[in-house]
Image 1 (tube, rainbow, N blue to C red):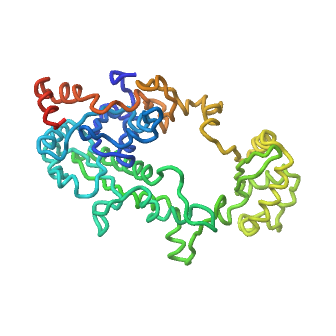
Image 2: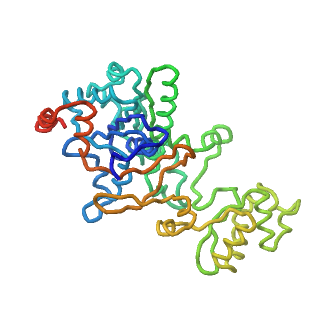
Image 3: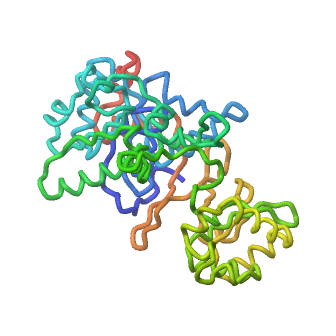
Length: 402
């Protein structure tokens, strides 16, 4: 696909400038690009986003095509006054600016919100940082892993007899990106009413904190601290991974009263659901969580994984295999919903990657192209959009401005 592919998503007509790197800010821009926004990614000349180097195979990144998809890429030196003035010209043509530098960096580059607003009163500035734009920690460097730690997630991840674990993906960055996107679209809706833009302040630690359910309230009211519990949620049973006759693992989630009763009936133990039995109530099952898991495991070991999944499906009991990438690529449900799609790529020919989420019925988003080369769209943006002549572009390039 090329950048001339027609755009029909719900954000078609919205222009986003992405001035950031790594994951938090860029993923927010990816989410908007997937829904049809014209995202122009600004990168420092000769350097570019480090994501272009991550996940390499045969000297080529397999991460960049995903996080950089659907974007136009330009080079621009924001540390120089000429680069800042050129950026302001782009701001005049944009709706949203996304940046994820340390707090104060844009101000140091003479690109404060007040200055952006001078050239475009409706501009929405989305700022993604570790700690937010205010407070005593705002000037600290902050990566996603630190936000996960301070937001409370790391403490409860892993097994109780080991140090806190990590999620295995950059979940803190991704959560900040999703909250930043919600903020950007909320501000865009407000601008439809007032015509005024505003600043969206999305911190990583607060984005993680927002997902921590009632952890803070439990401590505040009852002095209860959630601890690391490995594969289970304490007092939520049965909900665990269970072994099968053919040495596979199936996750069964039957912790609701009506669902657990159906499971017990399939197991040949309907009396466990009768009034007065400990397993008949949520509290009772939670108190006997370990014992109940052992009993269920004894039963699941008598059937194969396929047989167990068929029994669970027939009984209306949530259950599923623990998928790896290879399983996703072969699953008929993934295929039917096009959860994973094949996209043309200049370096690899074809790449399979996750599709756009969520799916809209009337104006669905799409993957139109994978991550572009650095500065690939300099002529499109600086020439067609801003009207700079080839000679002007060549001069700026020679001076390292673009």
